[in-house]
Length: 210
Image (tube, rainbow, N blue to C red; front, side, top):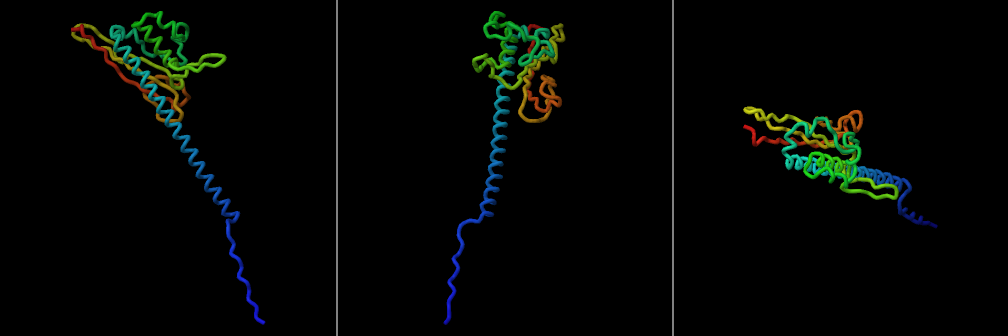
């Protein structure tokens, strides 16, 4: 008597190996997305800090432009003076608090220095905690420099205008090219690769000089 074999049922579903391969692929994909998100966040923070630095740089440029009589004197904006985080020239009262800047007299160079060094320290925005009020409205380790490129010379027949360079330096989040300007040099690590900087020059003429 002939017998017929029953056909074997086909296996369905996924094997353990297929599940493991899928998990590995998803893991690599998630790691890639995490790395991309980290780079995006870093780029956004770098862009934000550069924008803040440009605002603070232009603030001092406007102060110098509005106070040309003082700006034209090289002694009023001495070279190698650093304002902002970690400064020593204006580190003591009255340059720490908002109320004391007004006592220096609006329109004076001391008032401009006081306001600028406070802005570089982040006074425009603060975080209040139970123990203290911390300024956070500036870049990481923001520092400002005003250097004399060319001192004014009012000698008749010469009449050279004063040329000044305003620079703002801060600490970036990743290594990059080293800026040529020396503002903040050596303050953000031994190789200066995370030092960021924006700078501009301003010329203050001598309209009364012949």
